[in-house]
Length: 384
Length: 48
Image (tube, rainbow over all chains, first blue to last red; front, side, top):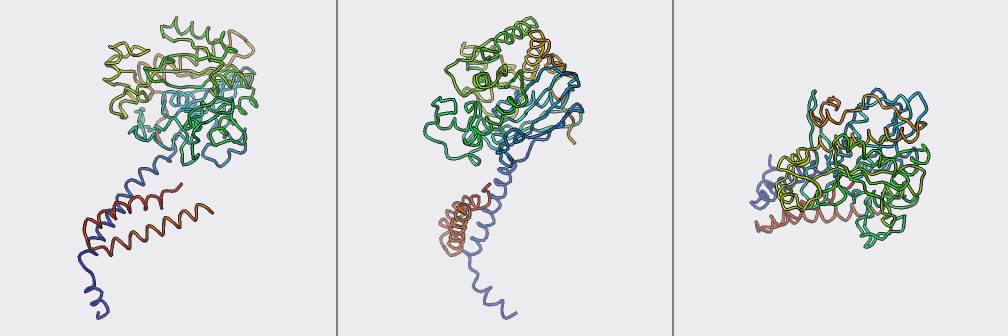
């Protein structure tokens, strides 16, 4: 007992305050730290029974193994020979319709002819962080009949924890000079570099996949801000112009307004340019309208991502500043995903028309109209 | 190796801050130290 008396006597008021402040500091660190680390929690997908094999991008470029860029590749192979299709979502993790379309397909389809490869999170590293100063939510939720599913909303760029520092000026593998931060933009890094930065290695891995699997048609699913001219569009390499025209006509006949944009030969490093130049694939990029990553948006929120309603954009539309119709009702993710689904379907049909040997028969393809009317959740697996 | 050196530097500065927090008698100086300490603790434990 006598041992403790002098110690007790030594404890002063400022020690108690220091202890309290230290406790408060540790609590704040725990709260913010756990939220930060939750960004590394992986999305869960439930591939359909039609899945043939699930592999990794490192299968095509072993240097990616055990890196944050080694993403999942889902392969659906039909019994009959046919064409090979690649669907890439999540090139830009802040463009959720592309990512969710890929997820919707991998959780539903079966293939009886040809082969379909799906990469839902092309830039997996970009899903592990947010754009600074944007105030975007880290996740968004979609209701399914069996409960709520959440999905990561990430950044356009690779996580700087995984690739740092950015140069002042970035000259990509195709020779185009860009601003420094674009060194972490997957869709400026094609055809990639075997010994480059992480993002260039991911791009190189995807190009290797296209070459090794002899992909006939490659689709890169994106979204664009409503004030961006290339929106609700099929961006095509000259080798896929005919296919894009066939698909565009089919979509227009179905009542879906979609514009055709030729890939500019001088704009280098993008999928629709370099995939077509460096491989034999028909390269196409699809764009829908996403208000949540536009510059005119108001308060960022999960509702903005899912419902796509933003009064600023509605006002901009009334002032004639946008390239797409945008009302107070917004453009919800179900409509954006439905657009992607309809375009993918039209392009696969067009491929069959152009070359019957490259026909791909996809069963259980989520119908665009039903997705638009009844929502995405109907076609997503219930959470386990 | 460079990561270990970085961790050791951050750990040294963190321990210094904690020592200063308990030694300092002025309340507002203690609060300022605690605010700086948050960033150092996050640096110490959130390196990926």
